[in-house]
Image (tube, rainbow, N blue to C red; front, side):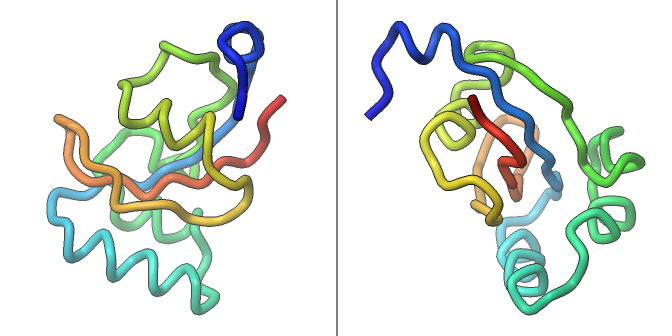
Length: 100
């Protein structure tokens, strides 16, 4: 488990796909796990402007994203799709691309 001090110094990069329906989010996760390209699906389906860039959110620290997002990004495995992650914006597929 990451300590509070480590979390405060932590940085992560992630990409995501934001959709309105949980079942569609689950379908996209299955498609990614079967080999479809995350970035292409983000460009085609994400409701977030980051979708134009394959869902790339760049680098950020704890507290810069909504709490539900932070929980995933700073605690789950890097390099695999996580979700559905429900926020006030909708349902997300989150892939942590790096974390330090």
